[in-house]
Length: 425
Image 1 (cartoon, rainbow, N blue to C red):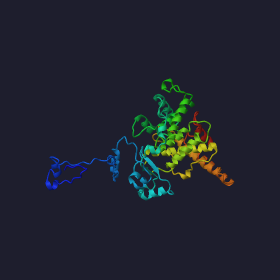
Image 2 (image 1 turned 120 degrees about the vertical axis):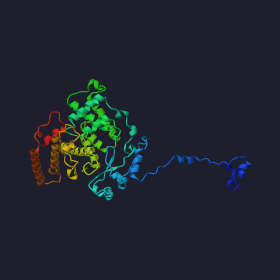
Image 3 (image 1 turned 90 degrees about the vertical axis):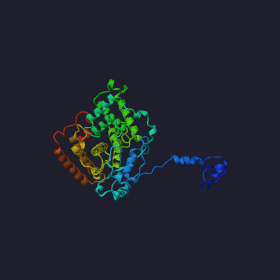
Image 4 (image 1 turned 30 degrees about the vertical axis):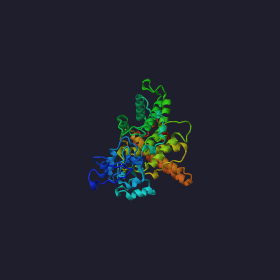
């Protein structure tokens, strides 16, 4: 068929055969089909093909695994997915996964999850959830100065990390050394090194060297900076990345905040320094569900061990700093069911001072109970006397059960928290 669009001539090829009458009149040997040109809107509609999401979770996972690496922006998730998608609730909580704490039974969200969760998971409070795109969790990433993303020279970095792991982490195992060093050496994109945590650890490493009267060596590439200047640099970098929520691992924010207590940021003792950072860490930890027993969750063993250690370190820091300032303690063990520290929780921490860590946590529990009852504002004289007797009995029992060598005075150069806690007895 051949025809001009303006004339709109009907083709009679079916009746007359090929070529049709119109094509014969115009001297065309064969019929030519008229192709209407596409409008701009039609072309635009054809260019945007909407993919249909597969209903099968396994097919969805396979499709996600083959998606373009350029599309690093994950689908913006929401809490409703946790209710309607069993594959999310039952997924293992890995290093890069996002976790959701459903709260106590008073929570509406917790109630809804319990209605759809499998019966054998009634004791679980931590579930997997969809990962958010970084743009949905970060704050003004475009304003992060390039200096905050730089690292110091490798020799100095290794020296500071070794100072931290040798002198601080054994007594306060905030970081799983084996897991961190695998990240540090490996360069695995699936298990990346987190810059806020690295800078916070370097900050504490500088603190150790300064306490021992050392300085950065000439061949270590410190840029001629004094250790005090380096410490300020590491603090500024870590705080900048924390403020812009550079990472999505909420556990890391607890670790960084605890490590920031080793830095004195001026004379402000409420909106800065130890009191501020401990409160910051506690708020994140409770929102993350770190105060609940994670035994029945699908967290990796390394993360469950880390959570238990971090919770008890948080409690010890909170007890010591609250006692030092005479302020109410934030954490209450009556609202937590985290198991007590055991030697198995220190796996991955070489040279861990297991006895000190376990016994110090017990001592802080005794002192916290005494503070809540002995110095309660609404307690009577009789209540205070009874509280003092209970504290005396608990301290006596505590001293009797101490392992040999655990009651010795702290070494020179020990942290103020350790010296202060031993003075409490």
